[in-house]
Amino acid sequence: EQVDRLLLGASIAVNLFAWAPNHLGIRSNRLFESMAAGLPVVVSDFPNWRAFVETHRCGIAVDPHDPTAIAEALRGMLRDPELCRQMGANGRAAVLSTYSWETQAERLRMALVEGRNIP
Image (cartoon, rainbow, N blue to C red; front, side):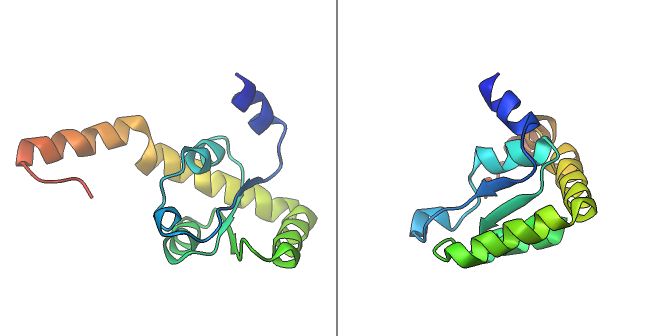
């Protein structure tokens, strides 16, 4: 309930991680919760994360160690509410069509049926 309240009151979700090998893959529930809530996202500029937000046109990747870059990204997004609305809608659509529990359950079921590993 508290997460839902916070997401409903937010304009942008910030999901920044410091560089570390275990942060390079996209394993953040917070990212998908933010996207499901229709929020545009600011993420760490790691190759997988950048490709993800660019593919889904749902946010911006920035250097997580550069406060100026982070602030500029946030200011730019806040100055363009239509861009934020569109990025948020794109992220929500991606979650509903590809990253929901329902779609992932089907993916897991098919992998089990076919006897293959899930990446």
